[in-house]
Image 1 (tube, rainbow, N blue to C red):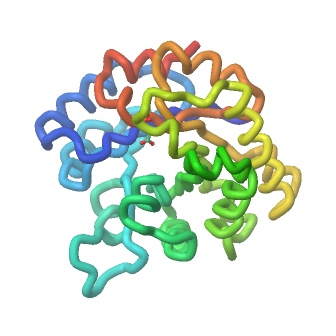
Image 2 (cartoon, rainbow, N blue to C red):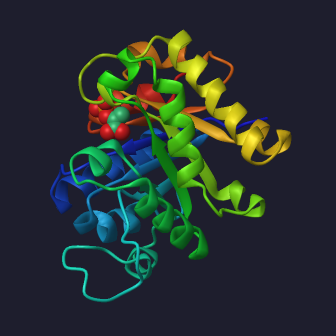
Length: 249
Ligand code: PEP
């Protein structure tokens, strides 16, 4: 049985004070929720949010991580630094990292392996652009991003891997894939996990959907067989919208 997993990506929003207060509010409101809940604030807020979520059922995540432990990497953040802040999960390969900052599958794979080596859970984001979807390449693109992102990841490391299918055209645009379309790609992803590993790995893999998830569409998405959770951007910024998503049923 796969446990639902709802994650909030706060991107480059909120000062430290805002992040601390909003995290405290969230912790209060999701007390007792049985499934997994994560928030990924900006790096500068990790320390204050870590204090607030300590001992709660809210997991602390980071939005990115460098592909190295230390060195001349101006502007980057090391796994050691994230660990020291109390981070448990890292989001890697987000479409903004891929398409705005030019991260390649190869770089993302290096980060995935390094994060797993340091004991983090990884949320590996994959998803096609609008042009790729219109050219009927969505399936091929997600399969390629999945196999490249997981290259040399061993099957005994997979329990720390979550996949987020986020069609780029649905992120921050208000356009959501229909539950049927999203589920169809999630099935492709699950089948590809089986192809790369085995049936058990595929059955156990948590696959989140991301792309304009809102309180009004979460239930129909979560109803689908292959959708196990959500990675939420805009609607995670306010507890009024994030909490109903977390408590989708
Ligand atoms: C995201 O950034 O991962 C995301 C899905 O954003 P939004 O929910 O705003 O589309």
